[in-house]
Image (cartoon, rainbow, N blue to C red; front, side, top):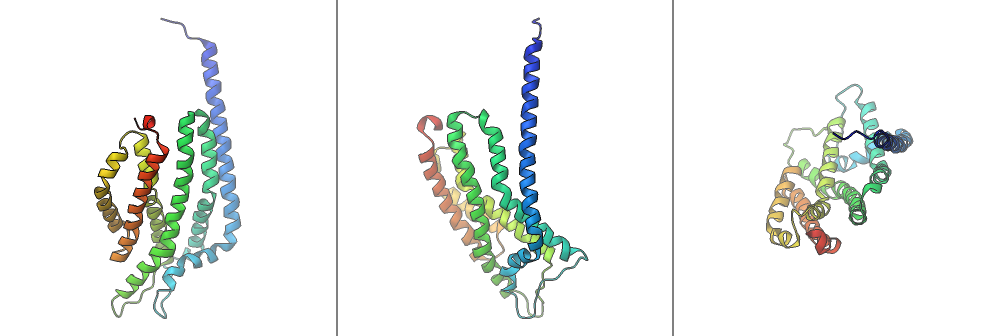
Length: 250
């Protein structure tokens, strides 16, 4: 048996301790930014909710309006939305702090691939949320208003509406990450450009299946999500050919 080297163990413990201190420091910076943005948005919470509800309110029939079925909902729900918006705005800073902590341990070729993927993932998620708000939600609410049975008053609870819209934003944001997912799978060696080209038909079927599951039950909303996903798949295929060299694909 070989004797343990106390100096090596001490050096390992000190290195681990310094990494934990750095991680705590970067997490604290991210939390401070998040809290600062949240405090700035709290006075605008009601205005933010009014903007979020606009796609539904504009499609509701005359006399219909949103309702609050719980006592604290008019106060709690806008604050919850303000936190979501603060997290949405602060996400670049949060990701930067995580990247600054992780990047020193990456190789050069890993950094070359990870940097554009991280930026692309953030931009595509924002694009998916914007697409859901400006394009899909007005069309979906128009359809839902049109199919409301006669004699039924369309009055949605503000908390349920926030939950529904948050789920839509998250789902569309994830669906818009198709190019990033394709590049990551290719970088891991699971797929390559040739397999992606041959699997285009399966990708199209999968895009329509996912769109039918996520979107409200109307054909227009399904097509409005499936078509961008198919286009994003093609962008991912082009990104694989551009970002990954043959040696990296192997």
